[in-house]
Image (tube, rainbow, N blue to C red; front, side):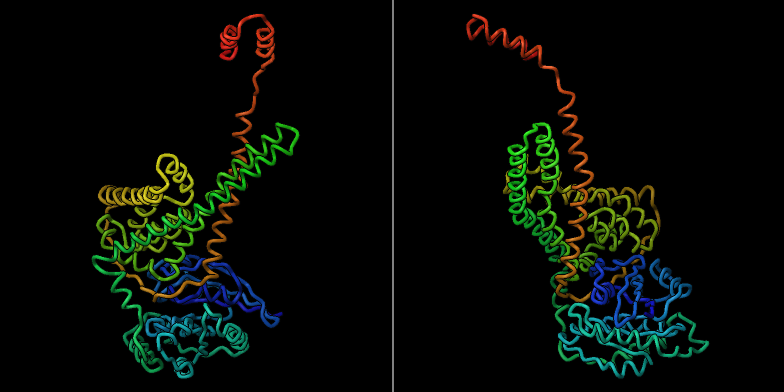
Length: 495
């Protein structure tokens, strides 16, 4: 069995991670915002008695080494061992993607181009002449669709065929990776030559609404409020079912286990503790689903652009929105997402204020207190207000840090706006599945141990009630009146 190592390179939001999912079934995080893949990820697949190892490198716009992602990718391409480069392009934005492709073709390695999102190009009325493109670039070009799994086997066949082909000769002057005006002009002319637009795209029409100067921010707040409301309305029904199930299980254990101590430990310790935590799982699933839909459609990038003007006043970057909004789900990936910020001061400020964003681990606590102090019809409003309050405090703290500790020049905002698209149901499912599984594992380990510890400390040591019971028996057997017996038993109870 032969082995092929493929370096997967492409610009952000071209569907690299989705293509790996289609090629190998790997469960990578996929979303339409810059910097999802911040480290190289390696997966393996077997096809026609060939083991293909695919290394997903960070999304970059060029090999200039300006950003952290560009440095990481350039270092890998220059120093690591691999057989060929698979360059993934968004064929709905061919001119911009060709700028990176022309640099990759200068490397002394075999290069294969995957024209991803070909189905979207056809839906938008964009016709691409792949044969002419392959001839002009002197590299094979395969139209693909990771979402519909179009030409996936054809792409694997092309990888195997290219691996067997001889390495093309490179000229000495081709090692200059800095793009020139001639290169940019070549990309522009080539994109016009091989592509033809037959009908207008709906993205600009939607952007006029979602990026409106006055309507954009209220629409975003309304969508987030809708997500939290659905979390309680729909997730609340599931929470009741889970509560009823664990209540039934707890009662059944007490009825069928003869030993009262073991029955109490299982029902009051294990089932009650873990069940109380798992009852919030439906709420968290709905919350993850809502945020995943906003990410998958490409709306989150618009929100980053929309909030850049506000965040800039507080010393943050528009891209800071991505780790901050990720902090609503989990703080760990939120801290990792700050790598997309090139300015060190803005990165450090974002790192400090992420803790004020309410992550999903705090949601059960919020639900517990809100359910105790607010009526059900106001629960979603209260939770939404808590999340908004955390975001406001984060902004105020960012302003304080920007004026006191982290003074410095702020970076200009540059970010790609991906086209609106329907999110992949498979990607949504795996995203919710992995996060929910992580939550369940925590409930089955740390929370289980804590529940047992709390039960043990509440049960032991047990007081010696023998003197109390003996005295009470003597009083009950005496000839005193019931009122006198009750008065005499009170000191016994207090003791």
